[in-house]
Image (cartoon, rainbow, N blue to C red; front, side, top):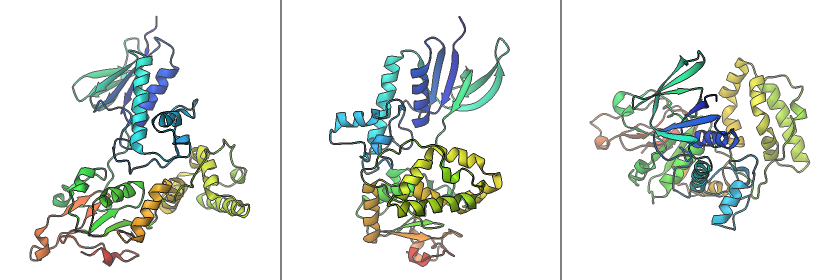
Length: 386
């Protein structure tokens, strides 16, 4: 009997867990062996779904979030066993989705005993190797010192730590905190202004975390364009499968041409009483093809000029989250600024305000009296001053 194919999956978040689950569901018995390497025994929740804060919602309705393509109602059925009032149009908490993934992981292990081995460890190196029969294999080195030999390796590494937009000296850089470190955010003094660098979904998560406390100091959100994610419609339905859009079929592969064609389509759709969200939803299965059709210089042009605008339209907020964000802005508990950070320095010791230490979060910066306001922004950067 041939030796089973050994697949090593590095990373046990959403992508790694679902890769293992789908391999297990589709494999022929005794033909596959799966090893999943993850630093912790918690599988499935990863970065996005690990928090127990029910203020953090999925930005996609439940009806579009099944982990099983052949069972599109799988997640909704799971939700309705917990709360029958939930529907395919409900925007549920990310905590609930994390529990769903963990449940699916447990069910898969029970249904396929011994197929998936979980190694609580960390992969530190990956090298090509030659097997005993001369076939090409992979050698995965673990932090524990063990070596795994794999036929195939899946890298499900998740999001890497984002970089601060400007260089920082060692003293300041040593105090950088990840944007998902909610515990440290809760410990920030409530009477001091806070600057969140970024205005996307991670920044909104940080804002909601900070807003849970009765803050007396304002919260600022700063990004190059000052754009916030748009909102989903209520009672959304899953987009119907569509063939490649005809209005893009013969368009030259340039950012300008694609943008012009899309705008014309949105204008025509609006005249027919349609919604721009429908057009963007229908593009979703075709965006990889459109992206790959662009030459490298056009891809760079998109990233430089249009990515921020695309992101706020394509990656939208749940209606309840958008309403909460609107309320924080209306009450001036949060303010949005368009601009860039060009300098960040600690004031001299001669200034009395320098008694406080400089606290910085990557994506969320605590500004106390030791920090200068951002300069040369295209908006009211002076409002950040303490």
